[in-house]
Image (cartoon, rainbow, N blue to C red):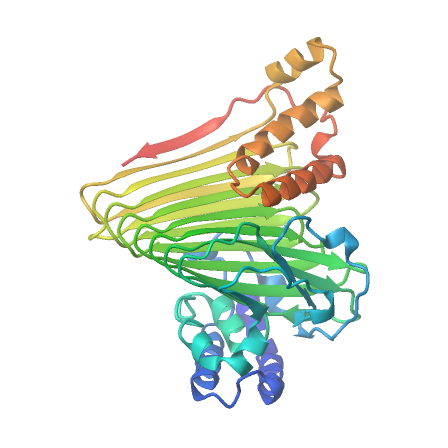
Length: 461
């Protein structure tokens, strides 16, 4: 813990140099509101530094490796062949290479009238008043140092705006690719998604690595604003290489009767933190937070959910499944906060985990904070191993142990995949999950595991 604080002090000069250089060419630097937003955020980061395990929200995750590394901005890079990274059937695909928008690789044709999809940097330059109405108004820079750092370095990312009553049938894909470099590099993608009243949209954020492994730090923040009676879906896919640090923050603001779903799939990365923070600010809102994390080797995958019920008659559901092998470490910290005004809240939280080796580890902390007196809230967590009776049953039907294990793990993973409403996103993610199980130790027979009963914690309030 002390090491992180010391490392932050030692690297503060490097961060200051990076910030000073960044502001010289940053988009909208002549806009007083944006310049002040960046400066305030950087001042906040300098004040707090990186979090340590003494912070309750980071109790199970040390970011000392990030804090002590001297990162520099990623260099521009050119890519030509993206055929293997395309998702068939999407409405549009924005491609970012090392944090910079690559127009020549992007596909922006065929969007319906009333939908704007563009580079955030370009939108700041051309329509600053549109961006100013929402950018930085929801992400919590005071509480989260990584949000503060991202806000200080707002440069590029995606801008998605869906006009009132417009329905986008196919998902919009945001593809972020990192390339191999000689020194540790960083990017700070910033996405702004505004779905006006009675609109419908789905957005896929996909983070991947190309060209080999090197130390990279991706610190992304997405602000999603869902208007009254809007239906919005957000999909996160993290599949970077094992030297990558990835911190993701999704901040959702929901209006009256809005229905929003967040789906996260964590497959790659050495150290990954996935923050999802919806605020149900309008009466009658519904929110689904659904996720799957699969780790092997020495991966560390941390999921932090902070659901705020700030209006009455709202419902939220959290379902997260984890599969961990090798010496992987998973974290699920789910927090539901029901404010005093949020009467008639209906909230449920469930975390289920499979440990495939004796060295795999999971820390799970379901948490309720209820300040209203007329609510229905439940939470629970389970930790276990593959059921030997189910494995034996499949083998008795002529299925090999390898295939039987694969079937059981796929069935466990598909509990989360099946909750995804978009056919395009669901089929794409199902393929990725299947491939991941084939190329990790997850389906390798584990000798001597035996039958382990699930350890269950469940409370009803």
